Figure 1 (cartoon, rainbow, N blue to C red):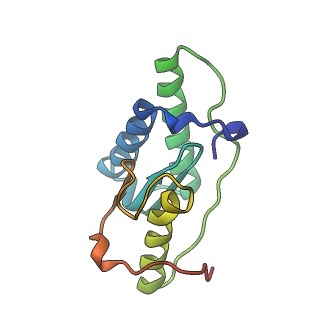
Figure 2: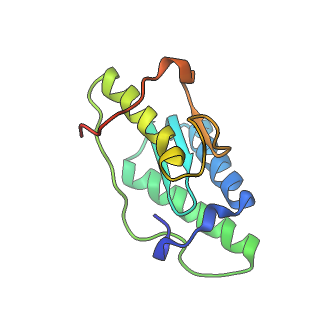
Figure 3: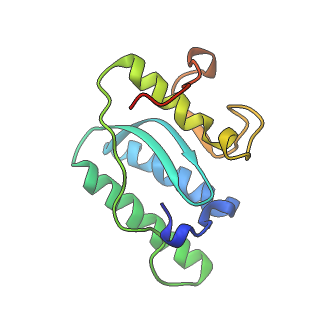
Length: 138
């Protein structure tokens, strides 16, 4: 969540930067991303850890994105609120439900008409393989 729910990612340049950083986490061998959505004031990221802890990966993403966004805007200070929310996934069915839930966020927020329309999202699986998440069961 962005600090004070500031809409940092309303800026296409900032949203693109966040997507590039998520990809770089994969290329560096820290994570294997499965799905993500960049919302105006927060990010949903479904990833498998490859090395290091979740805390390390989140801190690294937040530090890099804060530095680059601040440099781009000519500003200083915190971009992110402290902490993060996590959830352990224990089955393939749950994994697909979580991916669909993440991708449905822009639709629920009125930012997209249907799943897949939001420009700042990605999923490892074709959308046709995902069933709507429905009510959250976690």
